[in-house]
Amino acid sequence: MGSNKTVTDIDRSIYDIRDKENNDYRMRSGLTEEIVLKLSEEKNDPDWMREFRLRSLEIYNRLDIPDWGPPLSGLDIDNISTYVRPKSDMKQSWDDVPEDIKDTFERLGIPQAERSSLAGVGAQYDSELVYHNVRDSVSKQGVVYTDLESALRGEYAELIKDRFMKLVPPADHKFAALHGAVWSGGSFAYVPSGVHLDIPLQSYFRLNAKGAGQFEHTLIIVEDNAYLHFIEGCSAPKYNVANLHAGCVELYVGKNSTLRYSTIENWSKNMFNLNTKRAVAEEGGRVEWVSGSFGSHTSYLYPMTILKGKGSSMEFTGITFAGEGQDLDTGAKVVHSAPDTSSAINTRSISKSGGVSTYRSAVVINKNAKGSRSSVSCESLMLDDISRSDTIPAIDIRTSDCAVGHEARIGRISDDEVFYLMSRGMSEEDARALIVSGFADSVSKELPLEYAVEMNNLIRLEMKPER
Image (cartoon, rainbow, N blue to C red):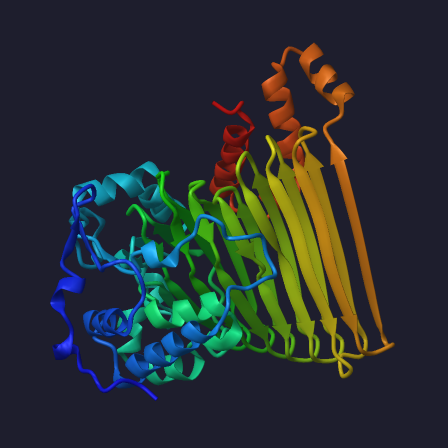
């Protein structure tokens, strides 16, 4: 398995194409062995990673498009550029980031958030990290927060090799294999035993290039008796061609540790968001997911947790907002593989102007997971009579010694509530936005203040009449 070619055999012209609009370099569209080898050379991969990419490419070529989500009409991977290099290497000082890139992130509030409330921050622009920094006080506790590519060549190389795409193997589905072949950028976070970080780490991903893909890989390891809150933000400008996001997140949570992973996604509505996120929790470990999805043309997004150790637990709190032209297929999965484990899934979905919101979940209670408990609650709010909301739960129980519950509710905004708020001086638009914000409160209250404000602003923006 592998290739007989070397990077010196590759036609250099596959890479030297300038995106005139953004003044960035990109590889040719499509996916070939030559492109994968060139990307591996660009990244200075160790031998094992180059072979891993090539094996992933072979798997990708064998697999079919998944059939468990909405149709991916409009996405032609042969027309997606899998690697775009901005005109900057990674900086540790914000002042050294090129002005046009810095301006983009400053409009998103990244440096202000770092100064006020973050232990460390990473910013990825297209396929590369352009900024990464961590507070000295955090580093002194033994916490590592850096870009994954640097960590791959440093003292944690063997640890990464042992964990990389073990939770999400390339054979899992076609887009996992695509990710394994062309991944680029992303973050590595390591929290030693006994360390509790009081303030979060954050990564922010900006896909700015037209017709491109972003394939960042995030790997987080929280050792025993530790705590981390990690925040991920995503955005992209709107173009008239398809963009693709097929990132991967792998979370390892040690004994009696807690990892909270919060995501606010504001992709543009030409984005196909096919992200894969998976976590495993050891004995007494806890995984907390907080997810807000407000963009993309089509989404496949189902964070999964494997409760491997006795007494481990998982909680998922999420909200999805589907507007005109959006088909968002989201939810959560959990596998109980040990005794006395517990999970709770609480989701809210909103659809308007013909948007389609689908909640898809899976709860598996294995036969050795005696004494386990799971509860699932999903509520949907449709803002008109042309939108759609579906709930597709799956429950697989293999032991009688457990307690599992599921409830679902679909409703519409009450005209009486709108009338009451309008009688108190609010416009109809503001009244509806306030009701929807209240519906989403279960998510916003789980976020730090500035991110809760951002989410409520996104809701108000989505509530504005379509232009």
